[in-house]
Image 1 (cartoon, rainbow, N blue to C red):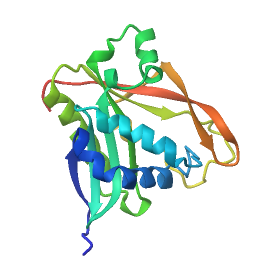
Image 2 (spheres, rainbow, N blue to C red):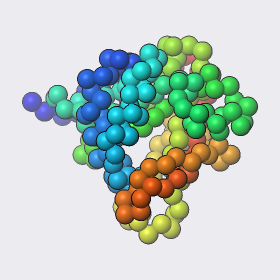
Image 3 (tube, one colour):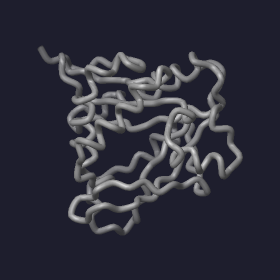
Image 4 (cartoon, rainbow, N blue to C red):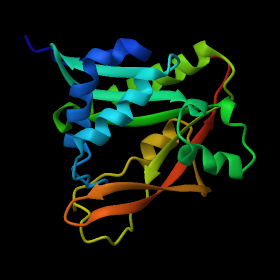
Length: 202
């Protein structure tokens, strides 16, 4: 049975374990396209998502069409993430333990435009508030040149959406993250952080 709009629910920590393979496949599908152009690596996916499942304070917002996952969004305390994600904050004297980091938001194209992206942000921000102790939420987005010939003519960037959510790009906070890019191979990609103060209540 297919619903008109996917249902979205949040899970935390080890409760995500049964869904890791499905989220890994979804990540590889969505990130295959612009702007990530990810070639896909099942072993990397297992290691990456296992780190979120190990964190008892993590959150997974999953969108289901029936029993099928069609979207996923993750988050965890930045203190539970790796040093490469923490370094731009350390360099700016931002307390790592006060930041809740949002990982990916991936959604199959046919389900975009139904408000699910907002729901992903709502659930992750609410989770961070409920945990307590966080002053900021943040995520990182890949930097691509405006004139990159691989950019699809009909591509719509997410900057307007992120600004509407209250997030501000921080040009001085960039890290390099490696992944296998289609037709290129292993490349270090610049990822710049966007941040927003986390209010005590919505």
